[in-house]
Each structure stands twice: as structure tokens, then as C-alpha cells.
Image 1 (cartoon, rainbow, N blue to C red):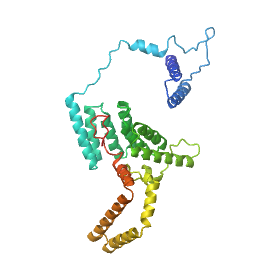
Image 2: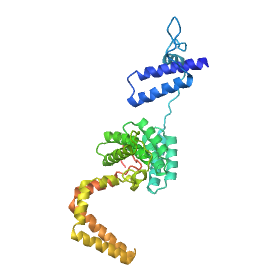
Image 3: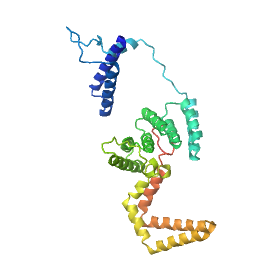
Image 4: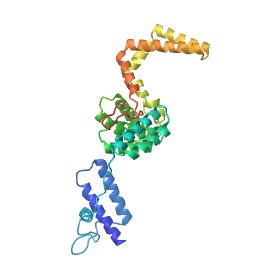
Length: 331
């Protein structure tokens, strides 16, 4: 046991050197400090104990652990780097496209299996991991989705969609602090993406609500929250209801439209038509016609706002990425 404790002591010394190196983030330093305390407690390491005459800890060794390790492995053969043939790369790309098509028709389990095959052929493509994360999210395995997003980011740190998708997974787990951090990184990488911006606002609001419910808490509450954990109040496909309800231009336009006598007459006609037909063909046609008239009036009243809504609908964070490389992030 004494040799094990000496190894642990050397490892703690190494962690202490890393802590003081200045290369770690504040969060990483905090985690490192906790790890050191746990090791000291588990193995009974006391740094205050010294030997008489030399002032050294009896567990100390003559050389730093990193130096010992470097010397020990310098003659070790390096593991060969896996290379992907062009044939495997093309086949993996084809499998990814098949998976994307399965996602569109909501065959998420089948899509997951196809993405697995693509990754087995080419495990250096960030898009494959990010798309598999979308499949995991649709299957409500949000932890696996987060892990795949991390793999995608490790391959391409500038992959904004991976951060956005990871934020969505954290939101579905009601981990709003982590979701906010992910959306912030996504916005920094793609500041023109309205979906990231609106989801960031929702995550910030959720975090404020959590902090109000749990004073002094970490902001990663597990309460159900509005919308069952979905960003923006649970609209399908990541559509952000919060963005709509908090958009003053939209709410002002809705108020003006509903005070318009013509609009009131249109709504009365629509409701009376659908009620009298009890959902029949004529009632559906009346509803469709009223909806078309409503859309036309919205377009005439505020075309810029309609364009914003269209962009919000198109920026679906669950949509798999069809890009052939991490740098091609189009849908």
C-alpha cells in the first residue's frame, strides 16, 4: 500500500502543478481542486508531514511524475493512426444521407442504426455524431445526445450546430445553466442564427425562474417547467413559443388584427362554419380559406415580421445536418 500512496502523492503533486500552471479555466481548476481533496481523503495523504533533517514528505519521490512518465514511454511504439479510405468515406456519406431521410419520416430508431454504420466507417466526421445526436434526442436519450455533441465538438470546435443541439438536449433535461452556456457558444459562432438567439433567451428565462424557485441553487433545477423541458414552451421541432409570446411586434400586430371588425367577422364565420359542419369537408374548406385570408392580412400588415416567423420555423435544431463536412452546416 505504501507504493500506491507514493504514486497517489506524486499524482496529487502533478495535479497541483497543473492547477498553478495558468492554462486551465476557472471551472477546470475548481474540478481539479475537488479531485485533489478527494484523493487526499481517500488515501490519507497529509502534506504537512515531513521527515526530520530534510523537510520532505516521506511519500515524495526524487522526480516529478510527468518526468517519470515521459522517460518510461519514450521508447513505446506509437499506436497507428486510423485512416479512412476514400471508398469508406463515400459509403459513410451515403449512409448519412439515408439516415437523414429516415429522420424526415420520423423513423428515428432506424436512422440511429444507419448513423452508427456511417460512424463505423468514418469516425472523424463531426456531422455524423451531430446527426446521431439528433436521433438520440428524438428517442428521448438526451444524455447520449450530449455525449455525441461533445464528440462532434472535439472534432470541430467551431461547429455551432453541435453546440445548439447540445443546448437543446440540456434544455430537455431541465439543465438550463448548461443549456445557456451551449447557446452562448452557438451564438458566438453563428451570431446571425435567430434560433440560437431565441433559445438563448428562453434558457436565460428558465434559469431565472429556477433560481427564484431555489434561492442559492446551482441553476440546474429538475422541475418540469413550462413546456415539459422543450425550448420555447414545448412546440414541436424546437419551434420557440417563448420567442413569439415575447415578441412585442407580433403581439401588437395580433391585438390590432383582432380589433379589426373585418377580422372579427372572419373569425366568427370560421367558427360558425366549422361548428355547423362538425368537421366535415365544407367546414375544413372554410377553415382553410380563413387561414389563408389571415396569412394574407399578416403579410400585408407586417411583411418583415412574417419573414422572421418563417426563419424561426426553418431554423429547426432537430433537423439533421446534410453537410458533407463540419464546415458545411446547411440543412
